[in-house]
Image (cartoon, rainbow, N blue to C red; front, side):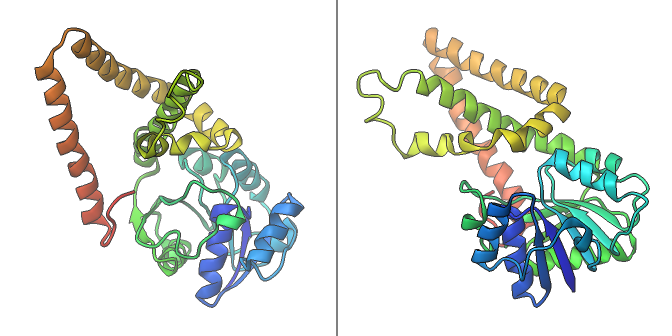
Length: 282
C-alpha cells in the first residue's frame, strides 16, 4: 500500500518505521524541512513529497497537531482524496467536524508516546501492545484503518468520539496540567537549600509530562477548556482534603487516602491490562 504521512515528528516517523517494516511504501510530508530531513535520515520514509502529491496514495495519515489536522481536513473536502484518510490527533470530535462530508475519513488516536519528541526518538515498536482508539463507522476505509493499526502491533479499540474526548480529558489532560503545576511549584523553590540535591526519581517521574510542547497542547486545551477546568477543580478538592488532614493530624483520613489510592491504581491499570494483552501500564 502507498501511504503518505503528514507530520514527521515522533508519531509520524514511528508510524513510517512500523509500516515500512510491514512492507508498505511510505512517504512523508512536513512544512519543516529540518523535521522531514531528520525523519528521512532515520529511515522512516522512502522520500519526502508535498501535500498535493500525498493525495495520490492509497492512504493519507494526518499526524500533525490538532489545529493543523483540522485545517488539512477542511482543505480536503470536495477535492481529490485517497480511499482512506485517517488522523492520529488527540481529540476526535473536532476532527469529525472538520471532515464533515469527507469520504473515507476515519478518526483515530493511538494511546502511545514517550518523553522525547521528534523523529530522533521514533521507534517502530512505539505502538506495540497499546490501545489505538478509533471511531467506528463501517465500510472499507474503517477495515483498512484497523488493518494498518494492527500492523503496528497496537490493539484497535472502537469507541464513540464523544466518549473518547470525555475520557482523555481525565486520563491525559488532567495529568498534563498537574505535572505543569508541580513543576512550577518545585521550580520556584529549586534554589532553596537541599532541594536540587534531593530531587530524585520520584519527582522526575511525576514531572515527565511537564516537558510537553505548548504548540501541541494549545488547541487541545482550547477545545476542552471547560471540561478540563471542571476536572482540575475536582482534583483541587482532593488536594485540599489532604492539606486539611495534614494540618489537623487526621491520620485516619491520610491512611484512607493511601489505601484507597493504592487499590484504585491497581484497578485502573488492571482493567487496561485486561483489555490489552501484555500491557502492564500506560
